[in-house]
Image 1 (cartoon, helix red, strand yellow):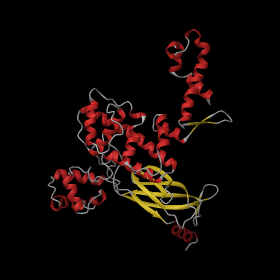
Image 2: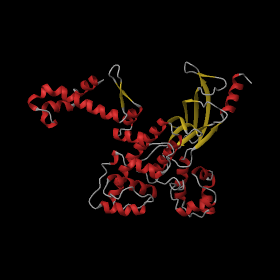
Image 3: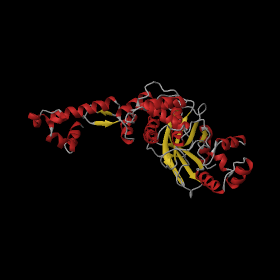
Image 4: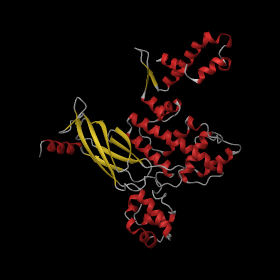
Length: 411
């Protein structure tokens, strides 16, 4: 409640400073004690009004309490400005897939307003814009949002940066970007947009891997040049999981078949990197939910609530979970997103994040379609870092329902 906010304020250093130096905070020093309560109430109400307009809180008219919304929880969890969550909740829509849209939406937020633009860096930014594939929406090259946009594009394109300060600035942009993109994913999931959520997950992979979505997934393999990647493609090797099938004869494949000319030490590092790429077995089981919220056996009911239990098993449990990356400034462990969606309706039914050491089991609550005949669900396992190792399973609910009915009846 507002009273709780007022009580909380009295325990802060701000309150102590306010009483010692009221004129600094535009409070009449002659009558500070008498006006203190009104000053704090106006301050609190002003802040709460801003948060309400940003869709972060709601007021309960009955008892006067303040309730945090889903957007408010996201704002707090990801430590972002309330202006950012307000903007994202409005701008994120179904059908978004263009990386340029995501880059602009990301870098125009207040988190990037503090990026330094030093003397004459507007000239460097203009030169950098020529080398970036997506044009910026404005020619104000002295703007920190434009510079953030260009540094992110340079990160994806692996464009050489003009000065060392830009390397530090890129680290700052990437640090902010991961946090805000995670929030963008949650906003899209909260709205139930399947396609936009999947494309935002792909965008996060781009940020971690430092490449565009249509670049080769082999770019981050140590010592892999464009020529080696091209020769792999000529032999049908486009993804990391395909290259992993060559681990037993890696030296022969790289040095004999595609003539990469790699040393023994380089081959060991490549082998170590490929061995870390996670191979995951994905299984699921669906059950109805009764009125008490407990899972029940038997055939699935159209339009009813259900629980999907998803089991994950990582085959290389003894290898490191550290992601194979070249250009991301921080080490990162691999994580996963589990999604259930209805592609026909473009509806996201459930989403959960999960780490994975050896085994993981997660339960997702979802509402089944009204008609099993015309609609099928899809189960997605999406990496939060790697490109090209995602998994998708199509779920025919009619067949699943028949099998569950047979199991329940003992057939």
